[in-house]
Image 1 (tube, rainbow, N blue to C red):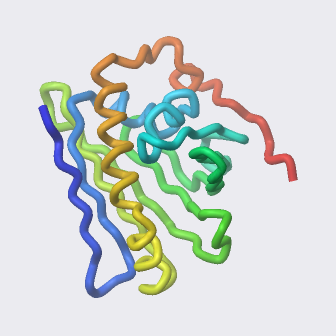
Image 2: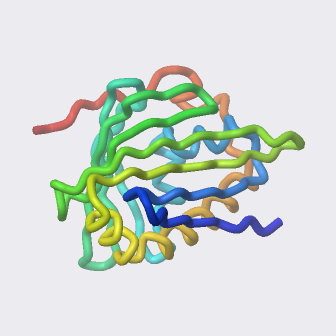
Length: 177
């Protein structure tokens, strides 16, 4: 089944709301967002690859990954403010090329039954200027390609029993700063 990605740019608040349904249970969609070994397999456009620098998927933990395509490199980092298994991720996020532009992202997962999940991600920015810069950066293209990759990964069926996150043993490498 083809799932559309809806991207709403709010007119009254500096936020972007993304809504997407997946043909997978919430546990699998959640795992794809908090387990670094799954995350790097789908994040971003298809012409880029990602490598995790550090990733501590717990409330209060932090993360950093670097996306590359040829000579181009883009690093992103943030903090997990709240994680609730299979239902909620609240995190900050910044592109290191513009470190003063930090968004607060709330990702909610809703079980729809019959193995389907609705993801709603609300990304709040400090200003309309910051939000509009993100939208103009090609974010929507990378988001759509990334979610199409995630569809393929989820269709293959991630094995939750072997995930370090599902075993509550996340990578705890600290930031090297």
